[in-house]
Image (cartoon, rainbow over the protein chains, first blue to last red):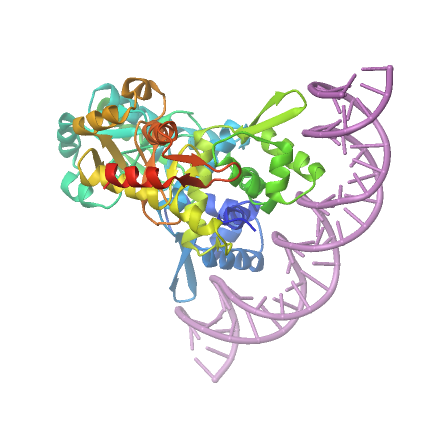
Length: 225
Length: 225
DNA sequence: TTCATACTTCGATCATAGTCGAAGCATCGA
DNA sequence: TCGATGCTTCGACTATGATCGAAGTATGAA
C-alpha cells in the first residue's frame, strides 16, 4: 500500500462516461435535478441515482432537497478546477467529442465554464483586457491594473464586493476549444453576470451554451475590442 | 454524445489503482524505468507495460529510451497539477492511505511534490517567506517582493535564470498532508535544488521522501524561521 | 557469438462495476 | 384520501478491462 491521497478513487469516479457527463453538465454552474442529470448522462433514473450517491459520498457534488426534487451542484471551485484540468489534458490528447449540429459551434462561441465565460467570446474578452493593459499577466498569474479596475467599475461591476470574495479575483483558465486562456475567478464571474444583467446574453435553458443577442454581440465587440 | 473534451477517458486512465500508483511515483519528479514502475504499482512487467502504453498514448507520460531501459516521466506540469488537484479532492474526502512505519511520518515531514518541496518543511518554508513579506499572496496569486528577490539571490538562486522559465515563478500548491499551501513554480523548484546543492537534504534513493541532515535541518530552521 | 536482461505482445481467465426492470418510499397536487 | 411525480433500493444480468503465463524482441555484456 502506498502513502498519501488515493487519487484512483476520485479519478475512477470521474472516469465513468455517465458520471463524467453529469459532472460536465454541472460545470455549467447551475444546480440540476437528478432527472435532468439522468437525461444528460443518457441513463435511467436508477442508474443516475446510484451514480449521484457515489459522487456525493466522495464530496464531488452536493445535494439540496426541495420537496421531491433533489438538486445537485458541484461541491466547489476546486472540483471545477480539477474537471477543467482534466478537460485540458483530454483536449491535448485529442479526446474531443464533436456533435455536428447547431450546438457545437454555439459551444465554441460562448459557453459557461462553471461561472464564467468561455469560448471565442471568453478568449476575446481576456485578450482585449490584457491587450489594453487592464489585466497584467505574468505566466499563470493575472493581476488587475488600476485602469482595469476603473474599466470594470464603469462597466457596472462592484469591484469592492468582488474583491471581498475568498476566491482569486483573476485567474487564467485554459479554454479547451480555443486552446488559449479565458478569465476565471470572481472577476470573470462578475463580468458575465453583468452581461446577463445588461441583457447582452442569456444562458440557454438547458446546457452550457451562452446566447448573445445581436445587440449584445455588437456591444460586446465594442466593449472588448 | 456530448460536446467538448472527453474527461472520462483521462480520468479512467488515472482511476486504475496500478496506474495511479505509477503516476504518484512519477510525481516524485524523477524518471523511472518500466521495471521500477511495475514494482511501485505491485503488478507484473506485462501489466505495467500495458498500462504505460496507455498512459503514453494519452499524453500523460513521456518515454525516453536508453539502451534497453525505458525511462518514463510525467508529460508536463499540467499533468502534475491535475494529479495534485485530484490528491487534494481525495484528501478532503478522507481517502488517505497511511502506512504505519517510518515512511509515513517522513513523507509528512519532507517530500518531493513533482519538483518542489512539500510536507511540513515545504509549508514552513512558504509560511516563513510570506510572513517576512518576501512573497506576497493575494488569494491564489503569489508574487515575489524585492526583498524576496534579494533573499533568494543571497541564498544562491540565480533568479534571472529561474525567471526566464516559461513556468510561473511562484505558485501555490495545496499540501494534502498539511492541508495548507507550499511553494511550487520555478522558484519552488530552484529553492529545493539549492538545498540539495548545499547538502542540507537529499532525496531518498527510492520514493518521494526528502531527508534532511541534522545540520541541514538546523540551517533550514535558521533560514526559514 | 552467446547469454543475460529489459521489455513487449498474445491469449486466456477472472474480477469488478454498470446496467435496468420491478418494487418501494417520499412529496405534492387535486 | 388518492393519484401522480420524483427518486431510491434491490437483485439479476452483462460488459469491460485488468491480470499473468508464455513466447518473442531488442539491447548490452562477456
